[in-house]
Image (cartoon, rainbow, N blue to C red; front, top):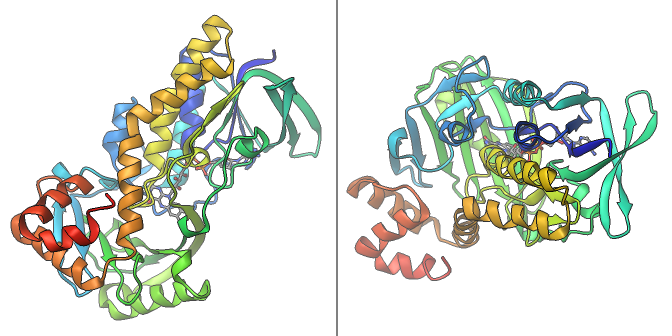
Length: 394
Ligand SMILES: Cc1cc2nc3c(=O)[nH]c(=O)nc-3n(C[C@H](O)[C@H](O)[C@H](O)COP(=O)(O)OP(=O)(O)OC[C@H]3O[C@@H](n4cnc5c(N)ncnc54)[C@H](O)[C@@H]3O)c2cc1C
């Protein structure tokens, strides 16, 4: 074998897998098709740093743009709820420069002994009978070659091909697709201490975020269930209307536009096979409520790297050995992901008036735990009729 593991894709999931695989003794090659890691950026750039801390990522460096104090959530009629970062159990606590974070994570992988190559596209898998045993690649000069290894890691993101090539069940329901559009606005005059979430008027299941990098710059974007819009242009109309109606954003100048699909589905039923595992968006480890996936990709990458290290010691990359990864990452986040998935499915059906009431109630009684379970507990006490509307599925 040329390497113990080849990791496909140097996003947060791939770099973290490579880092921990190398740290645990595996000869690791990390391949990225883009010439420059992390460029161009396609991300709202909001993350919760506590997840990164858990996997030993030092919280320092030029990838940190702004530490926020918390989040403000606005219901369709403008009721607002402020959640301080101390008990913000979900996704936002820091706004980052995503390109620099991806480069930083790749550098950490390199420091731990992984070999990193950019401008290399993986074009297919190599097979030894039923087992995956390497990859076919094409470099930036068009030269094709093959690399053999014990386990291939598909960390190739939302449009992952590794899972499909490996015959893992990667189908996704159209109803779980979210369309996202984001503007980077500058020349603003905003409070940089809070990220903001607006549950959009007039379209169930759409929400708008503002992740401020400073008092004059913010990523303002919209996520909208594709099944809820008649044509893709509608998403832009909703975002433009929102900005027009909010003076502190309408004064801004747009310097970047990003769009993309986010899969808000439940995680894949099977994320490992003989000689192959899937990490991050490729395994659909994305939070269906927030659309956040950077931290989850890192968390599952740590698990993957650990299991690959163990498999390398015993030279066992069989289906059974790789299955341990499938079991271990689920212990870390599967419950959380399923709760969010069920909540998202139900929330797209809830009337805006009920959301107004939920947000007002949470603001009135205070939020001890801003998780799906915490919200349900408040509703059970104060609005059992709304709980009956949304709670049964969750
Ligand atoms: C508009 C938008 C806003 C978002 N905002 C946020 C946010 O604010 N916070 C958050 O946490 N998440 C956010 N997300 C989600 C987040 O970007 C993903 O969950 C995260 O990037 C997943 O990391 P990953 O490592 O699994 O995949 P990716 O980051 O997608 O990395 C995959 C890598 O694989 C490479 N690759 C693909 N195919 C190949 C191949 N064949 N050969 C070699 N390399 C390959 C790609 O070039 C890429 O670098 C957002 C997504 C979108 C679309």
